[in-house]
Length: 198
Image 1 (cartoon, rainbow, N blue to C red):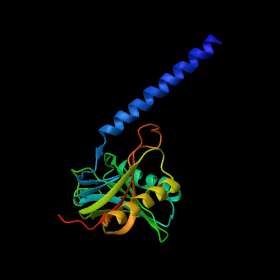
Image 2: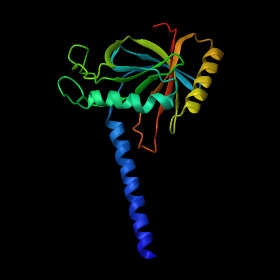
Image 3: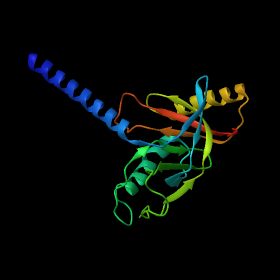
Image 4: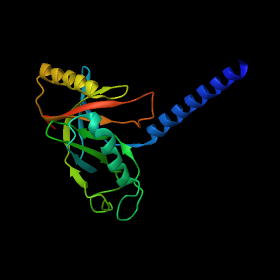
C-alpha cells in the first residue's frame, strides 16, 4: 500500500512539474504584438500592426473540424516542410476564422521574417500572406476552447459592442495561445475588426 501511495505521489509530482515547464515555455514563446487602446468592461480595443502569416484555407465549418488538421499542415511548414528545410519558431496565437462558407487558419511568423525571406512551403495549400494593420475588439476566456465556448464568447462580445455603440465588421475570429497538452493557465480570445479613430 505504501509503495502504491509513493508511486502516485511521484506521478502527481511529475505531472505538476511538466505543467509548470509547459507554462514557462509558453510564456517564452514570441507573441503577436498589439497595443491596448481602450478597456471597455469585459473586452478591450486593440491595435494590431501588419504581420506576416502562414495560412491554410479549409472547407471546415467548426473549430472541431479545423483545429487538428489545420494545425498539422501549418506545423509541418514551420517544422521543416519548406524548400529550405528551415525550422521556424512557433509563435502565438494561432488565428482561426471559422464560418459556414469555409475557414482559414494561420500562424503568425516571427518578427524577423517577412514574405521575402520566408522559405516557400512544400505543401501548396500553405500560403504566405501579409495581413494589414487593424483595430479589433477582443474578449478573453480560459479553459479548453470548443465550438460552444467560442459561440458563447462571440455572443458576449457582440452584445457588448452593440451596447457601447462600437461598429464592427467581418467575421468574429478565434485566437488560441496554448499547446493542447497545457492544462492550466490557458488563454483563448475572440476578436472582431472595429471602426476606430486613430
